[in-house]
Image (tube, rainbow, N blue to C red; front, side):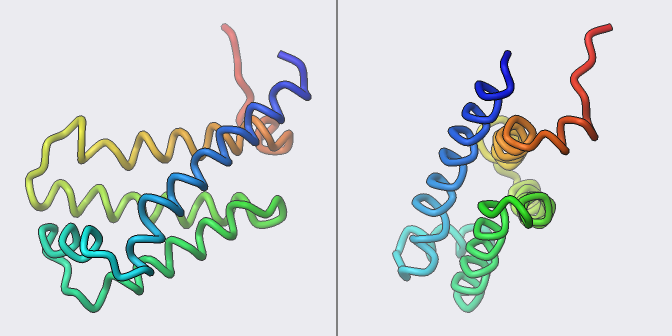
Length: 129
């Protein structure tokens, strides 16, 4: 795969991740939508944490978008996704649809970043043995 193809594939994956996070997670939380507060209540989170978690997600996404801070944003987002996964485990939700969803998102996020960032590809090379 050419360098240009990898970079554009990474940009597309990253854009899809960012749009998903903004549309499915950040906007409902910051918009005070019932779906966000109801979901958080079902997971055992008090109402007062919805906006704060939405703001943290937004900060991570913003850091992820800019090339100079993209790795920091990805690391912080993985921490957030790890907390989401722990919450899903704590309430006993199904493994593949709920618990591992954070892993799926993280792989998508890191895959996009790996494809668009040559320095990250050099740090974690793809090896065919």
